Image (cartoon, rainbow, N blue to C red; front, side, top):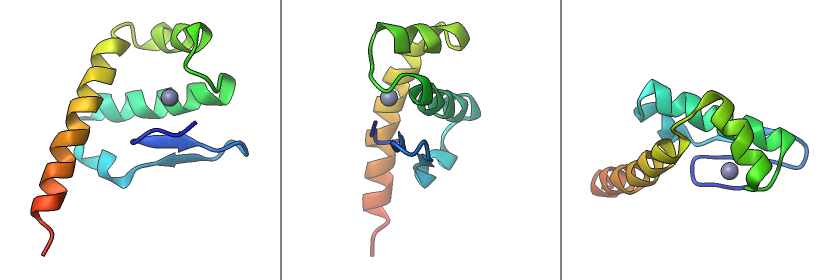
Amino acid sequence: MKSKWGSCSPKKNLTINTLLKYLPEEIIEYVIFHEMAHLIERKHNEKFWKIISNKFQNYEENEKELFEYWFLIRTVVNNNKP
Ligand SMILES: [Zn+2]
């Protein structure tokens, strides 16, 4: 399962985007938990979101924030290119 912030390979390796380090700690925790949940359930289905909601009741809010941060960080990175 691939996403902008992290991915989980079929061999169960977690990859986390290094840009994540600029984000608030609670969001980092959310991304790591999200990717770890993919070790149990690979698809974004009902079962997956149930696992997520056990720890992050407001996961919809977290997903929304991540989406916004992605555009924000991309803008910052592009502006700093020589
Ligand atoms: Zn996912």
